[in-house]
Length: 81
Image: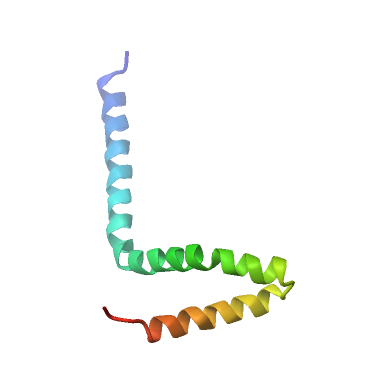
């Protein structure tokens, strides 16, 4: 059986960890758009990167540069339908 003091410290620690987690989440919210965009670009270009580097035997740096240029050009000239 836990004493009142042990319960107090246990709940205090839980509240402190939850509060810090909430604070970190709130402060990182502005960066979530960039993180989701990076994950989206990775998912969309993963197969093309594999094709260029494994099947066509391109250097990974050259393939990455080409795909990054393609993604940048597509983003800047994207259609607004």
